Image (cartoon, rainbow, N blue to C red; front, side):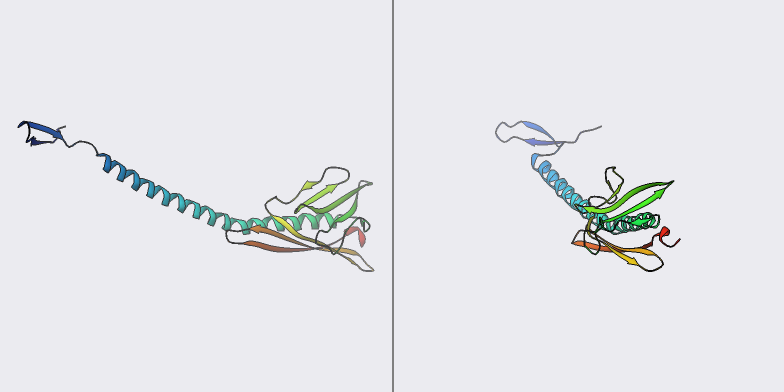
Length: 185
């Protein structure tokens, strides 16, 4: 490899100095670093924008999955109920409580759905309550309505989930209806 050299004549001493043209000057180095920082900053901003868009795109289907799963689970449990505990249930309120009894193999078990701190909870007997909805989806309305006829008993329930998107807070509503299987047999 051959290094190019430049011959110059020093006017004071009259001798030839060989200057090498290899490497960067400090000014060139600072300009390159500044350019790389600018490109890096733009890339980070683009990544942040895409991440925000990604979160918004997945938040609505995620809320739907959670909402439909809750409706399905609550409906299934209500259908298996033998009787409704109307004294411990709270109907027609935004933070409703639905308390009911199920008999399995001759053993009566008390079950309950309720909202605590914006999270749907399920409790069976004296066991600890289990969270059914994630913490980042806030339950703003959990309403039960008792529907009684001469033939059967049923429960209609409404569930509203609030979640944050990039620009706002959105609310999705889900409705379920279940007839107590034991009430018409």
